[in-house]
Length: 118
Image 1 (tube, helix red, strand yellow):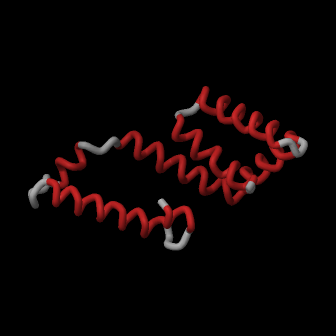
Image 2 (cartoon, rainbow, N blue to C red):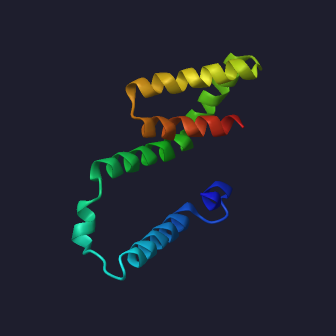
């Protein structure tokens, strides 16, 4: 997570390395015996992976349009320079989004807005 946060190494390479480390520990914990790929794929939640993949595509494309910057500016203007008011507005936006969307989806949409405010 630190490498992704600091953007020292591209996040794709960090994810590949993390999955290799997880597979290595899986191999060690099961004394060198592993399951077949088809058995491992049965344990995967394809609907969750599809949702995350789709939302990441949407967030990636929306970030090119400037929607998140626009939303961050609107929140900053509405707060009138008050940190407390900004936190209330941001929490209200998250609460409203969470009422209609999944929590992971809400975080994928709200995180870029929060980061753009910094």
